Image (cartoon, rainbow, N blue to C red; front, side):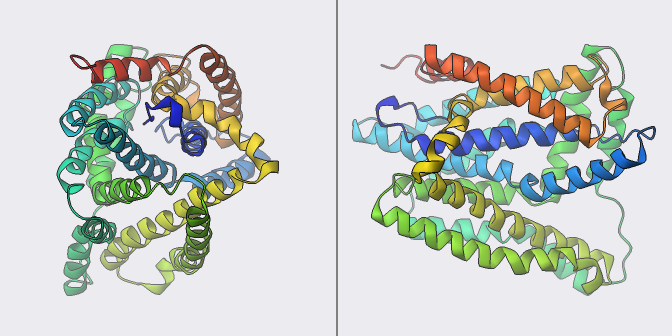
Length: 390
């Protein structure tokens, strides 16, 4: 997640990662780290405020933050690969080992939070090794094909043949429903086992049902192209590219979002609506994610905004550490083995807790960055990656 070449570090990448980390922290807090429980003893005004906060946060970041990380994952791989190739070294084998280590971090994170994405990135990341040996044109075609969510188009084809067929709830919901058999308990051991077995199964199924396995690899490949072309280094070429990208993404997002909001009235068949909704939501989120990334990149190079946005860079420099630390803190706040306050907090309290944690984590990240080149887990990851090498 971080470029280890400190001398040529591209700060905007840290800013984008840091922005994603903060947005993930806020989202996870309003959803109680995957415990979708809404207390019924809140005052009426707070229930209304909860809904406003929930809708706004998911509009802004739901399905976008993970996509930013996936894009940055590909960018980082391109930078690391280029750096090593310029030194006459082979990196692909080392990258495979690096992904194996990331899988270990993901399993550790899953102990506390079933919604971990690191382990999924680690497995899907292996496809970067063979695919990035192809030409850029081929990579772009493959990425675009994957972003179409080909498996869901097969489901849609079936749906058109059977438009009146009744559908059941997604299989992942069954596993998510079983969370309440162990999350409220005060036993950390039961929670850990539940997260690693039932929870992990549910998360994998949910990602499959929503086309995430295809879109994540597509984003890895898009990020790889962006990194290879050095489009995050501010030049006349990159400036033109990001301004055009922002315009195109905005023009695509507006009609996609309108369709998304009116999909239920446009399609009567439930089975057709589900497949169309999965595809359409993925495209809408992708367009808005590009708006965020291009917008941040452009704004970062405005003098009056650069200093303000640099605040996120310390988060981004230690994004792996931040991601796992927030899972540990979040589960200890909301789950039964900790304070168990999921039973008493709605989105309003959740966003306030998230903001407090953001401020505290920001101070910690700033302190750590002043005394260390990398975050604690980044240092461990880096050293383990280069075991046996110079």
